[in-house]
Amino acid sequence: MAVIAVLEYNLLLAAFLVVLGIIFDFFDGFAARLLHVKSELGKQLDSLADMITSGLVPGLVIYVLLNSQALPIYDVLVSDPLPLIGLLIPVGAAYRLANFNLDERQLEQFIGLPTPANALLVLSVPCMLAYPTVDGLDTFLLSPYFLTALTIFCTLIMNLPIPLFSLKFKNYGWRGNQIRYGFLAMSVFWISLWHFTGLAFVILSYVLSGLIIKKS
Image (cartoon, rainbow, N blue to C red):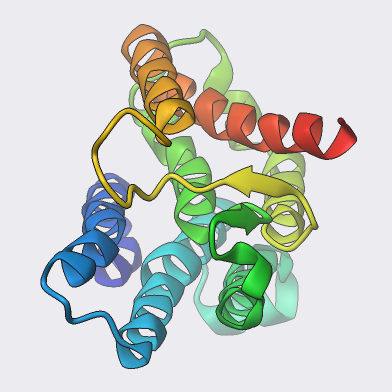
C-alpha cells in the first residue's frame, strides 16, 4: 500500500504506512517467540517484507522528490536520469538484508544501519516538507544535491561495518534494556520538541552512537 501511495504522489500516506509496517516489524519477533512459532521461514519472510517497506518505498520517495516535474520514465531515461539514483536505496537494502540473514555477528546487535531506521530517515524528508519547523528548510531538502547526498549516505550507511545496538526487546524488563529505554526516551524528547526534524536527528544520533562505539 505504501508503494501505491508513492506512485499516487501521496508521500505522507506512504510515510504513515511505512511507520505502521515498522511497528509490526518491531513486535513480530517478540510475538513469534511468545507464541513459540519462530522459524527460519519467518526470518526470510521478515526480510522480504522489510525489502518492500523499508527498501523499495524510500527509494521511490527519493525518485519522486527528484522527479519534481513528474516526467514519465522514458523522459527520465532520456533527458534527466538523476531521479533513478533513488533506486540505489533498495539495492543497498537488499544487500544489507541478505547479509543480515547470513551474518552471525548480528544476533544481539546490528552492523550497519537497519533498513527500518534508514526508511524513517528518508521518509522524514517529505514529512519535514509538509510540517516544517525551520524556516527555509524546504529549499534545502528539495535540493538535488542534498537528495543525491542523502541517497548515497543511506545506501552506504546500511552496509558499513558500524556496530549499533538492537532496538528489539526480548522482554520488557529494565535489566538488559537500559540502553533501549534510554534511547526511546531521548527519541520521544527530540520528536516532541522538533517533530519530524527531531526524527531525523534521532536516526543520525543512532548512527553517531555506533561510530563512537567503533572508535572506542
